[in-house]
Amino acid sequence: MSHFELFNLPEALDIDQATLKTNFLKLQQQYHPDKAEDKDQALIKSSEINQAYKALSNVDSRAAYLLALKKQDYHLDQSISDFEFLQSALEIREQLDEASSTEQLNSLKNEVKQWIDGLVREFKIDYVDEDWAEARDTVRKLRFFQKVMNDIEKAEDRLLDDEDFDLDDDF
Image (cartoon, rainbow, N blue to C red; front, side, top):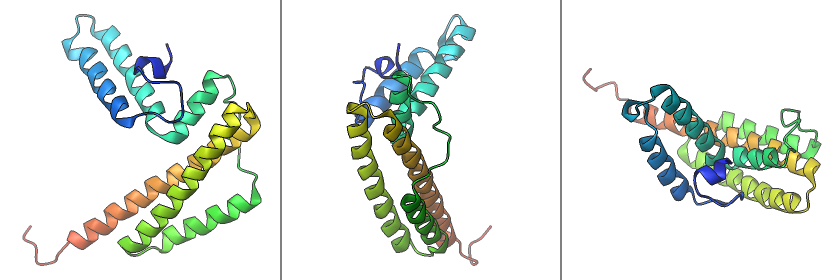
């Protein structure tokens, strides 16, 4: 059974995240080790459910999983060789390192979302055309931008924590 089948979702890059989460929570309740007679089997099933959820919850890992289903997921850990992309990626990383306000981070987040949206469109075309080399390259780029998005969110959290900190607070 594929991860998509497990959660009653279509085998596609675009999925309903709310349905994924709802079905995940239902399955987690159903196979919770504390409620099962066979705790070992429930633990295994619960782990499988968690792995499947993790694979489908982000667009980069979902795209990689789609390639895995087609047995085309090899060399996804190789470096990106697109020089123009690498230049843009370096500039975005520098902007993130220099960002000192929520406005700058929001602007950067919007730029990264645009990149991700463009890469999603590219992946869909490559996948339909069975251009596996290009699809793998696109997954590598999606992974990069997913990491950047995670780092932006961490930077936002740090900024919020710093703004909330007040020396006059009672400890």
